[in-house]
Length: 395
Image (cartoon, rainbow, N blue to C red; front, side, top):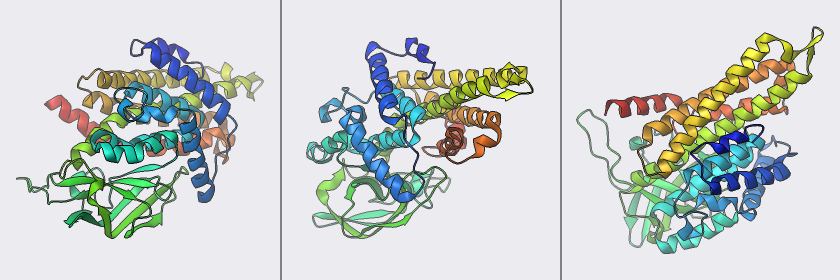
């Protein structure tokens, strides 16, 4: 990855991780190096579908699944997922998005789905033949999952869903959605809040009657996003994922796997910005010298490199802890908080070095500036990560 291959010598990695990163970097350099980032929605949707197919053909999507479902490793391997996300993000944010959403969107099935349900969907996920989506957030239930209002009730051999979801990645292009809905009301706690009991998970296909894409959402970085609507959406009882009431646990297990990989993607964006800044300062003349000759530039570069190394160390420590079966909740929160905040700072400083050129749409630095911002919010905003860390410290 850039000039930072020494990272693979850290003790967090085994030889299979080193081989995977080398192979992934070779594939990404050949496949993604000259891609133009699409701007309009139709082009983004088309390219995202194309990238899912390419990733499947290359075998990279197998790292989103467990071996029992045709995956590359016996269990989800967080270090492999992180290495792949950092490698892809370094080259192309949409490729990272396509990979990550295949994993996030299908993990509930892999973790809790019946053998029959897994067999119906997961092989196509691995091949890149079907696009998955994770539908948890609602207009009034983002970080507070227990505030969920989408409901599902049993009616004979079916479940009927009503409600809405928003900020759903792959919304509008997914073939199926892992949807979380209340099958029973939550318990009222002493402080007046509602527990996450009674939440269940279901597979909803894009063509199911009563399901609709209510609104496509255009964000800073061009990713497929949408608001979903369920109006008496009837699905077969066999599409319940796991048991009734297990949905919250399944959602949290899914997010635990992929939260650290958000930090890895941020590191990929930040590392690309640093490399672009290094190249620019070596070639940009100013007052009869190169920009790199000024001590102010050298100090900034030093701070950027240090911030990224700190973020990567926290990221891969958290992934290693998860793979080793050790407690990693606080470590994952520290990694996501530090990596996303540090990468935002690094990219901002790199853009400043580019001056006016860095503001031009289509420039790599301008693209990175838009792409990094969302990572400080999704899968738990920075403020939420601080709460998680504080609570873990006080246990």
